[in-house]
Length: 203
Image (cartoon, rainbow, N blue to C red; front, side, top):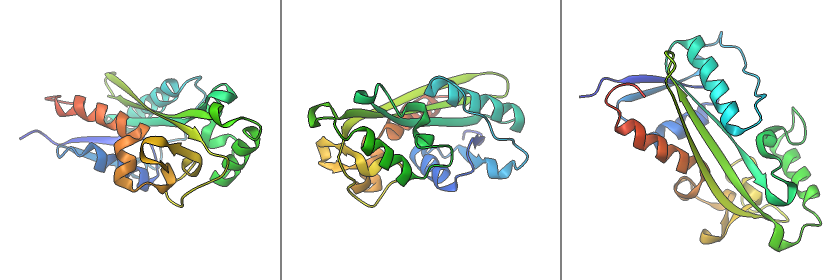
C-alpha cells in the first residue's frame, strides 16, 4: 500500500478543492487547502503567462507550508481580442469585478465580431511543486465559440457564453460529468493523474 501523500491546493475555495480532489481520484493523496494555513499571504499573480502564475503560486505555497503544493491558473483566450481576457480573465472588468461584470464587458468587446470569428479557448495550467524543488506543469485546453448572449445557469465565470459544439451546449448547460469530460481543467487533471498514479513516491 502506498503511503498517503498530503498536498496543499493553493486556494481557499472549498468548491474548487472538492472538484480537483474528486477528479484526481487518488486514494493515496490527501488534499488540503490554504484554509489550513491561515498565515499564508496572498500571492500576487503578476506573471505574463498561465504557466508563470501557476508556478509562482505553487512555489510560494510549497515554501511557506512545507508540503507539496498544487496551484492552477486558468482563463479564456478569445482570438478576435488577441488572446484577451487571458491571464486577466477573473479581473477583466476590474480587480473587484463579478462574473456578470466580466461577461458584460466581453459581450461589449465582441459586439461587432461576426459569428465565424467568435472562436476562443479555455486554458488551465496546473503546477505541482515540492518544497525540495521538484516541479511538474501540465496544461489543458478546450476550444469553443463565444455566444452573443448567455445560456445556462450552471458553472461559473464565462461558462454561459462558451459554446462547445460537439455537445451543442455551453459550459453552463452541461452536467458536472459532461464538463469534467471535455473541459480544460478536466484535461489538465487527467494529465496530472497519469503522472501521479505512476509515481512511487512524492510527485
